[in-house]
Length: 92
Image (cartoon, rainbow, N blue to C red; front, side, top):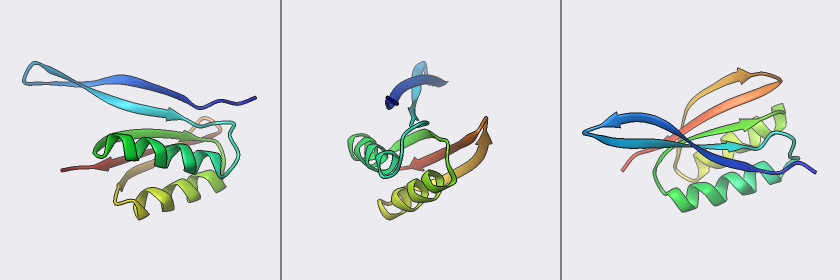
């Protein structure tokens, strides 16, 4: 059974403070699971940058619509292996 993997990557060092980037690995999950899990995470974080990995066109489109409707901006969508890497951001 596919599971959602959430992990954090070191992004950059700013004023001696390490910034972390959240990665949601939602590959292998069927809609609406990627959308639901993405919304849960953006509600927790409220701002910042999240990298979302999905493996279908449907998930890419549905997650993209959901994050925009919650006030986040899509920074990029790129092919990643057999799926897509969606980078979203929300600033203060």
